[in-house]
Length: 456
Picture 1 (tube, one colour):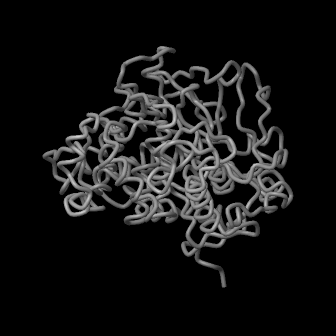
Picture 2 (tube, rainbow, N blue to C red):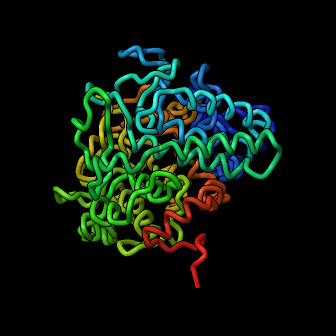
């Protein structure tokens, strides 16, 4: 075990030194001492600090927003080191709030960064109010794929989720902070969610481009990571969708509720409309729920806490079962999601499994599977420290293939500090769910939640 203490305003912070474990180190540091020396709190502090740093120290310098990727080997095959990610930036906005609350930075430092970010977003390219998936440091769109050079409503939803949490954090304090909150409200009100129904259809479309119009042709329906987009679209005070868009588009006229049982657990919703795969990658249980609190959240289709707990537990049980007999899988090493792999970026889930573990999967599931996630965290930081770098756990690794790269992706690092903080204090859940517009949108769609005041 090769961990070092770092001097900062955080108690007992631990950071891996990116050195490979040696036989001598294993012999000299018994497992029994790990529990005494490195408490769960210290390990949680450590991983939260490092992943927060991706969005603080590692941010794109002109905008203050998140880089799509950071490669510590400095190899960028597509020369995309400074590409800005819209959705990953939304996650980063929330991670910075964690940084303030954990005293990694001051409130003043965060305010300055947020002012820089909001000023950038005000001037950046937008397409009927939606930002693109990727931007350059000039604020201009850069294509995510050939025809994806316009508005991306899903990425915009992830960004707005973060912006609204920031707004709630600052809205009642100094004039300067209130001014930031007001600017965020204006950005939020500028998103034309209803435009993305493609002329009034009962479904939301993912993309629109002034060059290619609707040629991407991606109506978003059935369960995946996009629930937050429908909630925000219903919540918009300026460009809202009708309830029928949620019921007919997202919920597929009720077909979304046709669940199954896998590893003895109900999936609660149908994860795949067009095949028999029982569950999706674990990021589906994270992205929409960075702000949207699933505890006690129900609608006509699902109990969202049960949905996410079962989703995470299915992944855990799958690793214990390990049907493909991959090396390393088990109670200390579990969790599949979309990430880097030996074959480039790839999706990973039970049934579509290359033997690649992505740390964000288990770590970001902390609210759902606290003991199982902490077990993974402890194993990673005390037994696999060569997989830890400056910004926390590297994106993915495979013991089966003796593979890892010292590389990070914003969309994988971002959920880690946020979901761990939701487990520890509920910070981001309380902020986002406290937003009046969000509450109105949830009521409109027929949700129930402890945060909603039910009408008499």
